[in-house]
Every structure is written in structure tokens, then in C-alpha cells.
Amino acid sequence: MKEVDVVTVMLTVELLDVIVNTVSKAAMRKGMNDFVFVMYSNAFAACFLFLITFFFYRNTTLPLLSYNIVGLLFVVGLLSCINQMLKFFGIGYSSPTLASALSDLVPAFTSILAIIFRMEKFDWKASSTWAKSIGTFLSIGGALILSLYKGKAVINHDPSLKLFPRKLASSTEFDWVFGAALLAAHSCFVSINSVLVTRIVREYPAETVVVLIRIALTSILSVPAAVISVKDLKELRLGFNMELIAIACSAIFVLSFRRVIHTWAMGKRGPVYVAMFKPLEIVFAVILGITFLGDSLYVGSVIGAVIVVIGFYAVIWGKSQEKLEEDCAAYSSESYATEAPLLQNKRMGA
Image (cartoon, rainbow, N blue to C red; front, side, top):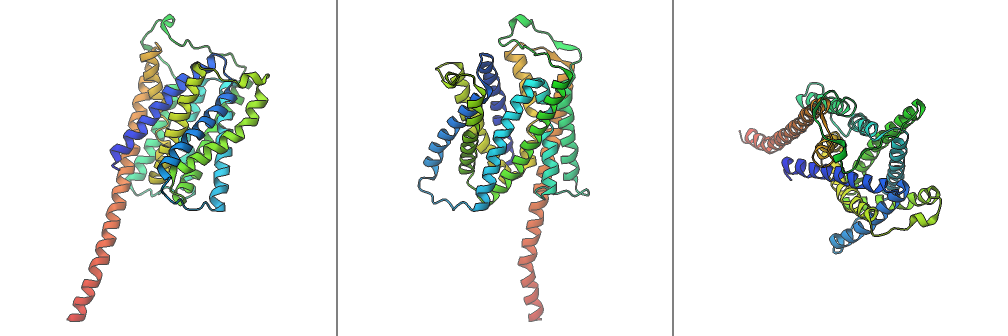
């Protein structure tokens, strides 16, 4: 698969994630419990992926899962459940804006972990390393500017025209700091999960099966939290309304399609490559907010978006250079292996 095709697919799934998040927020504003949403989304996704897995692998004999892979999958499922809970708790104590800002720490955490576990090359003399490092910091910095700095309004919209008016809950200083700590922990766990999933899929290259087991475990582990969080078990009932649409969209497009693509990309390109697309979510969110939600466009959003795009292209260029260097090295090795016996035969003949 060409690099351009991989980038296009990754951009598509990140855009879908932003769209589904908008639908999910609309459902939660109607009173849907966060934990119930997590439970049903994962349960629906597990059922959907089971059908997909059965269809694609019905005539294929899958390798047996080793105890090591099963153990790692359980850890990933547990971390996925904790991640989703940390995210919702963190937003409750702080704000969605702070959540978006701190989620941009994922590329930094992932880069550090990938270097520690030797999943990414780190050669200061290579131009690809410099490009990836500078691009990572630019993307994180641009996303933070986009999230936290407004500046003057470039495009103003009438607040009364918004389809989903924002209601910011007031938080004390302690709540804000506590929420920030939870969201930072969420970003750290996301990075750990990415590294673990990369290791799993490289040993067991059946992406759909890996994601199915991961989501099924997350669904099972989220049931107790959902039951405890509701005051009345009647709140667990679903009706044919906005909540059901949001759950279905999240299950199919985010938890199923997006995670399968991410898992495949981690196995092929590594965890850092996937993490680098995270800051682009904020850019997409700003564009969708201006286009469909009547949000205003600020100078900070423009500056931040430009920096994110520059950083993103720097990382993509660095990864392509790294791939080119690996291909050249492999070609040189093959050429030497082919020419060495010929030279030896000539010397013996002489």
C-alpha cells in the first residue's frame, strides 16, 4: 500500500472520529450516562466485529493465541476501559477544551515509549530523525496554541445560530487541576496501549481478531461501572432515538473501523506514526465547528492549525526518508550478497 493511500485512510478515520464525537456529545447533552454509553458502544462494536471477523476468516485457519498474547490483550482491554473512564471523568472536572489540549501529549508520550522499547530508530545524525522530532514538537505546540489561545476573531458568528450551544460548567481550581491530572493520565495510558497493541499485532498479525478481543474485554469490564453509575436500572434501557444513533456510529466507525485501521497501521508503520495524526483532530474539529456549528474563527486557531500542518508534514517526510534509507540499505545488502559469490568464483578461476 502506497504512503499516500495510508495517509488518506488515516486522515479519513480521524475525521470520522471528530464527526462521531460531535454526535455523541449531542446524545450526552440529552442526558445519556457516560458509562452506559461506553458499555453499549463497546458491546455493539464487539457484535459488529464478530460478524466481520467470521465473514473474512471463515475459510482461514488462524494461529493459536499464546499465553503471552492473551495476557497482553487482557491488559490492553483493561487499559482501554480505564482510558475511557478517565477521559469522561477528566472532562467532567475540567472542560472539553482542556481534554483536547492534553490529548496532544499522546505523540510525545508515544515517541518516548517507542524509543525506550526500540520500536523507533533514534539516530541524531539522520535527517529523518530530526524531521520526526521537530515535527512532533511542532504538532504538539500548534495543537496547544489552537486549544488554549484565542486572540482576535477572524470570523464572527451569531451565537443564536449554533445548532449545539456550548454550556461550560464552572470548576474550582482544585477540580481543574484534578481534571487535568486525569486527562494527562489518559494520554499516558493511550500511549502505553499503542505500544502494547503494536507488539501484539506484530506477533499475531490478525488485526480484526485483535481488535475484537480487545473490545469484547473492554465491554465486559465496563459493565460493573455502568451498573454502579446509574441510580435506577431503567436508565440502562435504550430507545430508538439520538442515543441509539450515537452508540451505533461510535461502535461502527470509531471502535470498529478506526481501531482496525489504527491496529493495522501500528503493525506496519509503528505507534508513533499513528499518534502523529492525533493533533489533526483539533484542526478538523475547528473546521467542522465553523462550518456546521456556527463557531467563530480566531487568530489562535489559524496559527495553531498552520503549525500543526507543518509539523505533520515534517513527520510524514521523516518517515518517508526513513523508509527510503531502509530500502536503500536492503538493496545494498542484496547486491553485495549477489556479487560476493561471483567475485569469489572469478578469483578461484584466476
